[in-house]
Length: 120
Image (cartoon, rainbow, N blue to C red):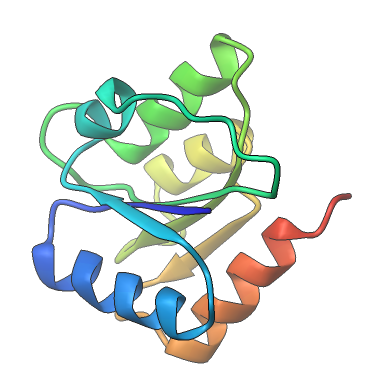
């Protein structure tokens, strides 16, 4: 299960289509709060959270920090126009496995998600 959290509808739609073409189940959310308020179904297979850093309300780094603090860590791939910025550093400290620059290269995104789904 891939969870895509991005306030940009075009990005959500594109990543959903790309992930589904790869055979993944994909759910998308317009904000961190939408993701947090969605019913939690714990899937018997691996999950990955793909999220934008710059979003209104709770940003992507804050979402990862919140999940980590509550003990609900999940593999994460972060998308951002500023991969070397402070929010990207915070996201890495909160558990993001990969930080990918926008615009996204589809092959890089697919590889990053696949790598995150492999147990360490």
